[in-house]
Image (cartoon, rainbow, N blue to C red; front, side, top):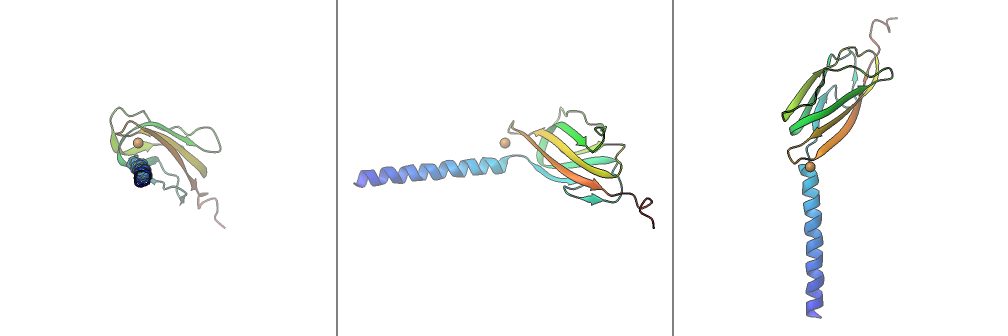
Length: 129
Ligand SMILES: [Cu+2]
């Protein structure tokens, strides 16, 4: 009986350990810390660039800005070097809603991808009374 109990105790401890490891590696994943425009932002003026700040240096391998019209042209080029901050000129944004799709390879070799959206409000000129 004693040995069966300790067997189950070891099983339980191992399960807890695996869970802890899985959780901590998820936390170690590199992610997007902040962006400009920020996620879900409603900006008054069309930005001329997209700024991304990651939690650790990454190689940004994809950045697409999708609006309601044709894909927005950016000066994005896949990065050969790992850096934490990116500033990517994106000309031609007008009023409308946009989704930024990005993918980056972190120091642990994992590719992380995500997206965020923002809205460029109609210009004050066109909403004048
Ligand atoms: Cu990872």
